[in-house]
Length: 150
Image 1: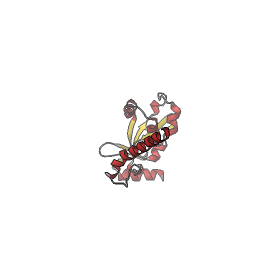
Image 2: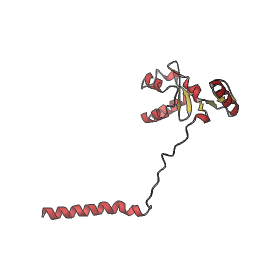
Image 3: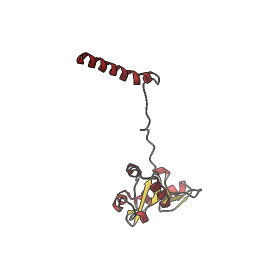
Image 4: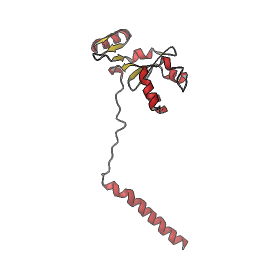
């Protein structure tokens, strides 16, 4: 079934092989999630970061956080872990040299709409309350201070 799935994907997207690798007309290589999952050892490690596939095998020993950190994520999507650590611009640029392709379109996660914020109050109505309420609270505290200290 796995090899059949790879071949079907390859037929749908231009040219490909039984390893789950698909090459588009523009020369981009696409890898299935099933293929990437096979590369999860210290001698053969691939990562997915922002839907791009990286072969980080040669970088394992050089990683400042240690080989174990990368090995935990090998063969899977490491986007969240990569972003949580807060990698520098240099680290992001260094990542490009390990780029081998992209995650196949069928395996990409759908973007969630959790970053959409909905406001229910009117735009102008809340502007004056941001300064009026603190001003009134300060006036009340000032009057109470005068009343109780005199």
